[in-house]
Amino acid sequence: MINNILRDLIDTGDIAAFIDNILMGTEDEKKHNNIVKEILKRMKANNLYLKPEKCKNNIKQKTRGYTRKLSKGPRS
Image (cartoon, rainbow, N blue to C red; front, side):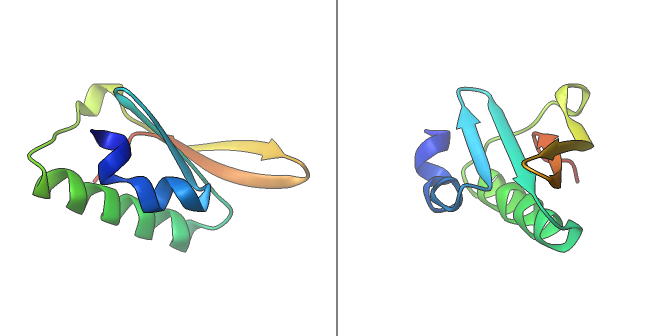
């Protein structure tokens, strides 16, 4: 279900969805925030919700020389 709702975002390579997890990786904060807003909008439209205690935001990880911001689930 979540894969169908987020298919176009998954296809960009900026997010991955697994059963009850959404992982994000972006190279800049503006793009990151835009994707978070889009995910929240789609989840609301499909009557889906998040558990804030399971969300992690602004985790920095260096990959292939780039620092990416990662989130496990979006936070509002």
